[in-house]
Image 1 (cartoon, helix red, strand yellow):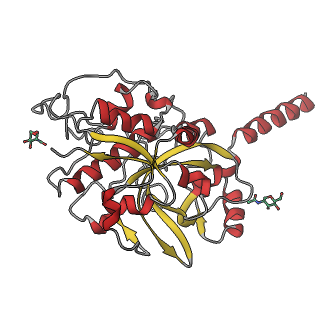
Image 2 (tube, protein in one colour):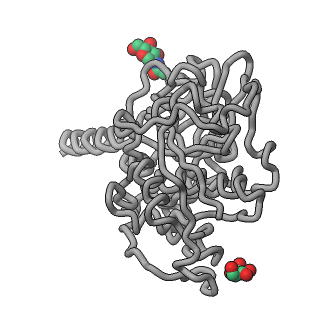
Amino acid sequence: MARLLMLSSVILLSAYLTEQVHFLQPDYINKLNGEISTWKAGENFPPDTPIEYLKGLLGSHGVEAAANGPFKTQDPNYNSIFYIPENFDARKKWKHCKTIGMVRDQGNCGSCWAFGTTGAFSDRLCIATNGEFNELLSAEELAFCCTSGGSGCGGGTPMVAWNYFSTNGIVTGGDYDSKQGCQPYLVPPCIHGVPAEQEGSCRGQPMEENHRCTRKCYGNTTIDYQKDHRYVYGAYYLTIDTIQEEMLAYGPVEATFEVYDDFVNYKSGVYEKSENASYLGGHSVKLIGWGVEKETPYWLLVNSWNENWGDKGMFKIRRGTNECEIEESMSAGVPVTD
Ligand SMILES: *[C@@H]1O[C@H](CO)[C@@H](O)[C@H](O)[C@H]1NC(C)=O
Ligand SMILES: *[C@@H]1O[C@H](CO)[C@@H](O)[C@H](O)[C@H]1NC(C)=O
């Protein structure tokens, strides 16, 4: 009987241990901090967060798709850019555009691709109209109405999103529960740092089901749904040679990269993949600047995992070495302003 009890507790214990995601454990984070030099790791997700939950947040199919182009290599507006500054932060250059630095929350949904693209388009439209347009475009409409090449919370391809802005357009839409714009986001935010039982935690819950696409304004209902659509002239990928000129001319761009498991623990500094990290999935974010920190060149990006992730919701990643393929699949479009 004692033996049986002992045996069953060993089985239970090992089941418990294998369920714990190794890269979220304090031991692993300590060891990681001993090996990395350009960035710091810490707890963003509690150690009992299931790996499926983390993989669910990574919904960009952009890295693979970029191989097919089209790439933009020239633009008449690049000709007036005479030098590339060593440091650049779009929030400082276009202070009047409040959306540039906004850290949003995709909730329990792989809609990062909708945040990276609508985010960059909102900023670009503000810049192109000198602040006359100064609000968010709808991640909700994009995620759940753009179904060719996008599957809502199941992920999507940023290039397909920009093409959608070009042909269908996109309405305005603010954060969850905001009533701002035509179609505000309808997936509730996730508070990552709290126990699974606590209200606001998404852990242990199934991913949000895809919403039905609605063709009317339910946020600010005085807005005309048809007229509210904003467009771009076309969609393109950037090459490593054009990223900075493109940003100086038009503002932030969408960036897709490969997420490895150490990245979820990012807290500050310039991220570089550590030696043993394993691939988790493709992720889409918004690129807003670059610079050099302690001699390491970096890109500055805004994530959509809430302000309590990373460096107040933002991160830096090594620049110039195609870290995690980030320099091969950035996408954008030029806003139509008339
Ligand atoms: C990575 O793997 C090497 C070789 O197995 C090991 O020495 C090192 O401690 C590992 N690092 C981490 C952070 O797990
Ligand atoms: C709703 O939209 C109208 C028309 O664009 C605008 O004038 C008004 O300020 C908006 N209301 C709110 C609460 O945002």
